[in-house]
Image 1 (tube, helix red, strand yellow):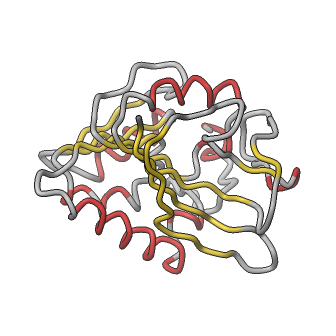
Image 2 (cartoon, rainbow, N blue to C red; image 1 turned 90 degrees about the vertical axis):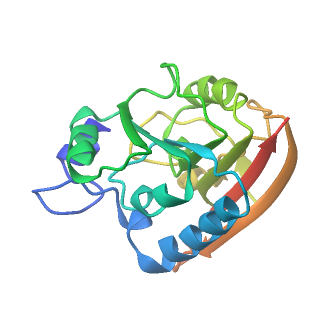
Length: 205
């Protein structure tokens, strides 16, 4: 991930961090934000939220005020330091952690936005074990446009499973996440048959 930001593989200018169009394009992020804000506002007691893979925080910064506590986590140390300098709030904390290896903050809800799609199955399995400690999971993944074979393994990095007509499905093998409820919050269909970005809410058993 360090190389992705250093080499600007997701775009942006040479002077700052940029987490790609999926974190900035209004047609993608505005419906996403609307659905998450609606969910957060449905609670009389605000949730504590753990953002696993917060990136450049263009999205997270718009969610802080709807939460009791917002833990923002990324593996890139320079990015986290930049975020700490750019964003401050009484209920906001940033951490530089490897979410597949390190202990994560306790919270009611975990957010993973287009993070797992870049990771190997073994790393995802490590993360799933930790996700079982949250009450809610809000997962966003880039998936093929139609039927696909879930969870074909990849090497961690910039790429995702689309070229293998695959995508991450936490409910299928080898992950088999146990849930009591599932609800699609948002779906954005990309142009030129490049797939769709799907956000799903899970309530964990």
